[in-house]
Length: 372
Image (tube, rainbow, N blue to C red; front, side, top):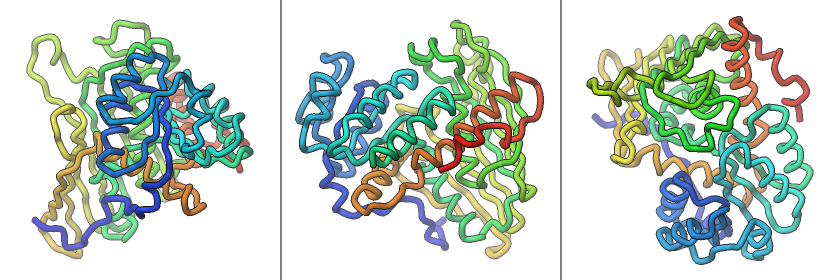
């Protein structure tokens, strides 16, 4: 069925953003199969790439038609064509890359960093301040905000079509492929997986005032970790509530049983109801996210807009597009580093709540770190 509301589901981009030179740091899966593929499709100007492993950088450059491979970050920063740096390295290594860019000065006007920006709110706040002092626009790649269905739901909320939010839930049953670098982190699911859903709930409903969380190790993940399966509830001053079940076990689907994997979400309001799915668990199969919604205004029927594009890789057009638009227009992207500190504060609150077995007020977390 068509969408009578013509929902806003994709960031509009001016052709001027396609003239901004982008240099890429990293050549792993997320860069190879998401960033660079989305940038090719959007017509963004990728000038060159560097990686810790030159051979991998060469392979990715050849695959995605990137014209130049730099020896290292210093070589990349010396290229006069570059104005924006796109970082795709593990979170424990990202802060040093950002520090080097901020200290470099010169022509670099923007950075797109991965999530998590850092593995602690304190270090992330330091990076935000460094970039602000250097005059660099820092954006964080919270790409779930640019999933088509997630963005369309935000438009429903913005326009009041769902009324006042009552309850939002995300139910993830999926088995991630934990990269080798994950073994070295102090947090697994909270900082790497749940951060997507926590940022999405902030995007839809604003900032909560308190959280309650519980976690346990994932039986399948063999390396030591505390937070595998995460359950958490968020409370908002408006009275709204949100919750997510981030289940990376999903039953013994890899050990011989049948599987039931997927990500389903639901936003209930006083004036309507939105239901959706996220297509990512079926990746690399192309599986667009979906949205079904109903409102008191439209009566007892479901509206079911559908899209050809999917979260991976298409949402990455939106995150880089936000940054390029901000750099060209001298504005602040919604995914700016300072806003992302509030997402990291929420991540730390969830982690602390699960660790200490108590409800945590967001006011306990961050304090001066969240202020300009």
